[in-house]
Amino acid sequence: MSDTIVCPKCQSEFTYEQDDKMVCSQCFHEWTPGETSDEDKILDAHGHELQNGDTVVLIKDLPVKGAPKPLKSGTKVKNIRLRPGSDHNIDCKIDGFGAMALKSEFVKKA
Image (tube, rainbow, N blue to C red; front, side, top):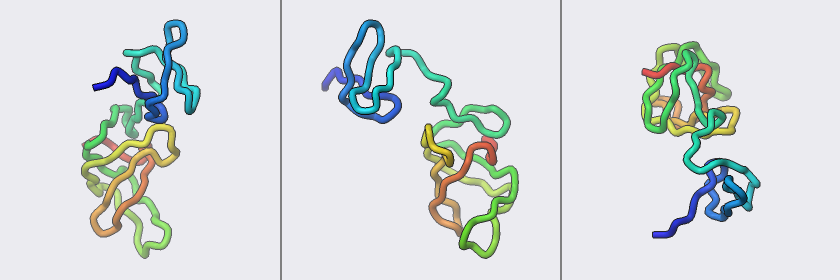
């Protein structure tokens, strides 16, 4: 196995050490190894940290473009995937609607 440290922002393997920090040669993101960044954490509407694979519940009705009806409040969404740095930072599949992206401010952790 290699000792390559992957960039936490863009997942690039092309990183190098500079002084006491790591630098990504692709996106130029700088970080200290072993340190977790608060900017990468995704929080739900109540401030709980979300993780990949979590189950969440919608807290309000959300209109869906092209759909005849909105997503109802209380709809349970299983096995979410997080996308830090994106406006709609949750990818998921919802029964009856299919794949879509949600904002974390409209969900709570189940």
